[in-house]
Image (cartoon, rainbow, N blue to C red; front, side, top):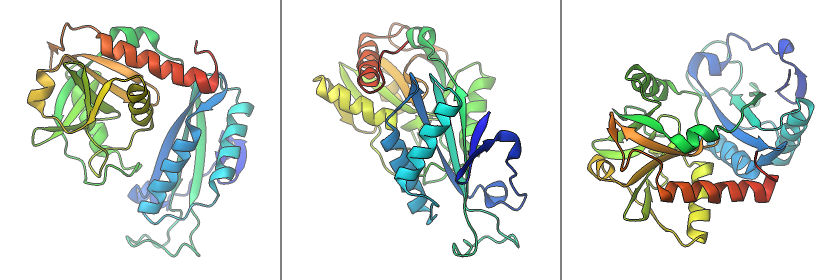
Length: 286
């Protein structure tokens, strides 16, 4: 399997990450995940833009241009023969010796970039069936708009959900729903679609961006507006969105059915609109 290590495509076995790397010691780094269908990236520009935005927010100077990065990623999925799958890319601030909290001088410490590919098929059966969720307090930090590799809070929330037999955790801050542990969350009430507006408390999801666009273009009622746990409990439909899950129905929360307990008509419509957007850019989804 080939991977990207800094500015080269190499065998995975050749990659050596130093024990003094600030990503390892401080989680001082960022990441992103972009998906391919039929060997073609979907929303590559948006994912690259988000990576650069996250870098800017932590004053991390990336070692390449956006165009160079896109060229390397495209070459990687071609070499690894990725049809439907993901590319995970990560940048850390680099090797800091001696270990010290302040940012090192970027003229002296170079960032470390890696990217790997994974074949990940679409789970149409699960997208039809839906998944379960558990409500968990959002105890993460206040800069969730940065796609940081420091994900312990997200992991703890997801683990709490899994301990109770749920697929995902729906997070809230003092009763206001923010997002899920690894996805954005939406609710539907009286044919109006709601999701938390972008800001420091939620990740600006690329799938969320696409869904907002296709829903508005289709004439659906959409509001980027915060909602409460009480609103969520009274909703007709709930779903999560992410790069890999696309639009995933949430059919039960805390063991209680959402609406009829099955995928609802609005989510089904949004799923098709999203597939249409993919096919317009990447060809027939299969």
